[in-house]
Image (cartoon, rainbow, N blue to C red; front, side, top):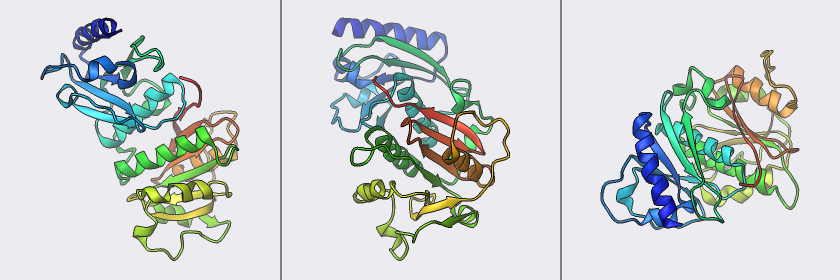
Amino acid sequence: MGSQNESIMEFACRFAGEIQAKAILLYGEVAQDLLTKKGDAPCFDTILITREKDNVQHNKKLFSSVINIPNVNVTRLSQIKVVITKGLATGLFKKGDKLLCLTGVPKFGYIDSIFVIDVGKEFDILVSEEVADIFEDIQPEVFETVLNIALELASQGREGRQVGTIFVLGDHEKVLELSRQMIINPFMGYKEEERNILDRNLKDTIKEFSAIDGAFVVRGDGVLVAAGRHLSAALENKDFPQGLGSRHIAAAGITSVTGAIAIVISESTGTVRIFKKGRLFVDIEKGME
């Protein structure tokens, strides 16, 4: 399907120029033939999207950046949301950017869809006027790591069953003031370097603790402050989406009175939702691609 992908890419370059896009987002698993294409200059600024599991060989001269996404099954629209959310967290994208996204079904191996994304207008996440300060005081790699863990838990569960939990990132001192322990804090007494979420060796431990009631509290630099935390802040927002339960209300409530971000896994549906300033920032639905 090389000729089809090349034709679509040529069209995408022209179209991206016409709409003054910031970049083209290319999903590598549907365009293997384009990844090692010879040449120094791409036809347009192109960002490569890859799965974490894939050790993708590509011509680095063709791509301005690479964004990794977890190897989990989410809908195609949710894949795009994950990419844009990560791009916002790292400062790669900003409100007002237009992005051209080229994607398809991995097992077919060719591009079959083109999406035009206007950062700041699409999805719930991007309606915020304060989009630039959403990730304030939270290191990008910390947010990305927590999001990846949440998506894996939502997709895979734990020991064959669905789990639901909350990760609260940033503004940890105020979050602790407005919450209480439901169990003995399993992270108490350990050195900070031994309980940083950026340590890959902690992933299984975190997933194990996801089965207990209450929220994780994570410092902006990744240090795990607590688990099993009951969030006490009440939500006064009358525009809260209907159909969401107490876990989501608690997450929205704590973000309405602190500067924290809350990432919530729905136990019933496996949907991952992100809250900021008491509002739903983005939802990422589990499903086949």
